[in-house]
Image (cartoon, rainbow, N blue to C red; front, side):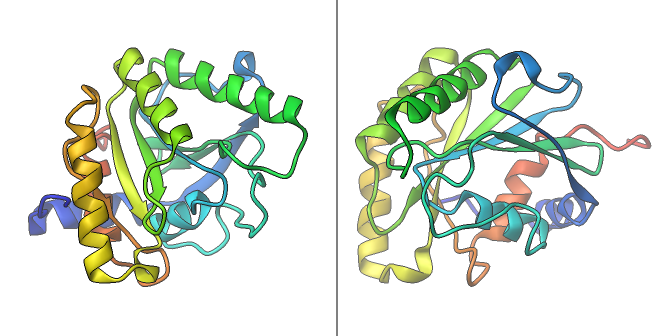
Length: 216
């Protein structure tokens, strides 16, 4: 399970994510990324895992990132500026999507190129549906991040739909797996965009990656 955050860390996370967060860039081409001038935090996960819902919950906005019940809705790298101190990056979902195989492959190529080569990428959050656990496509992304030496943490989503016993078992199972992955944080972070569980703590963790404010 995620480590407890101090009140000071919770407050720092609240302040950061209370800043204006606005959409600034979208691209489906690796040669059209925005300038690498701010720390970036990427959100990766299987199609329909809840990436957009989590971004909306973190920023306290209902419509910042588009959500859909249709897997494969996010088809580009979408960049959001967070108070001029960091960028949040909503990545195309991998795994199942109701589109052509060629389009899925192009998304996967874009995703892998970004994760391997973006110098300002400070952390990737690999989102995993708490009801289903880690799938083969999640393992592929984790191995890619290991090889690229990009720090990442597994964030469980939709924990409000998973019973306490099942959630505890799934968490222990994933944390045992993470010991084999050198770039992974050793603990799992459970969240629910619906109830807000774990959101403040995730904000606190991610706030440590942002650029300092001008007066710091």
